[in-house]
Image (tube, rainbow, N blue to C red; front, side, top):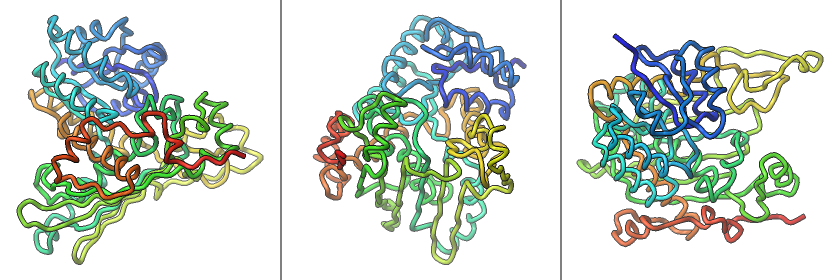
Length: 417
């Protein structure tokens, strides 16, 4: 049986990470790529990793006509244009079996709604890529605690955080192109994890109903003069003019539709974690039981002294977003598997082969976008957002945060000197 042929739109950091993840996926290959830059490099990487020949195509439509499923790994601001081209390719005869979109689905609720509509118009299965819900540790704790939950009741408080020192590419730092700052970039992960951790075993991922959102955002590091200058020199993004938040935290209250029980999810994200590298922390507290996860508690550590540090060419050879090449370093032997990328790819491929949506679909991505934008609204308006209010839901559909508009100075502190 021939391999399932995946095509990537985009060849940046996440596409390269997904290419590495394909080493752990059976029956699939990276057959092609289209990107404005980096296509040749991704093609070379795919061949080096042994995950496919990865032919470079000149357009989205040409790619769609030569693969089984297409994955959108391009920047947030390009998603709508790409989805429209995919839909056009399908109308013109491209025999795709599925469409994948990396998080976040949209920079605004309105944008996410449009992406859902376009996906529906194709009639094809789809998958929203939120890798952290596919993490083996998160799935294992749910299974391990299943009988305890049945006896004692579900988890009532979930906490999830993702923190690192900041994104790789300039557009991630630009709120007008990315859709915000760290809340848009990583808050979607943590909010989704909280919701999933709180969801009773065996229930759909949207079973619990979000009822209120309370959040705060801040500019704690990258608004300072020294770091603004460093950011501008590296990326060309000027946080003295159009800042984005580098810290976000909030609480989302959910209600069980059957029992009426109230549960809460707390998320925290920052671009300020200057230790070993990317850190994911999740925990859940239930009546009489709990679990905890920390991605930096690796079984492998290495030490590199000052005299040996010059031999290290790439700090990220040990861990994503690593900021150090010496000292005591945490090493994750297989980050792509640890973070859930292997499992989300496997789920998408297997689901598409059966003609079904992935475990998470575009509609789920829309719900996560709503919660992210409600968090921005809460921080901006300094109040709790009631998601049971129809007027609030209507307002969210057309809401664009001040930060995403490039007006972050109105709510984020900037120290001039």
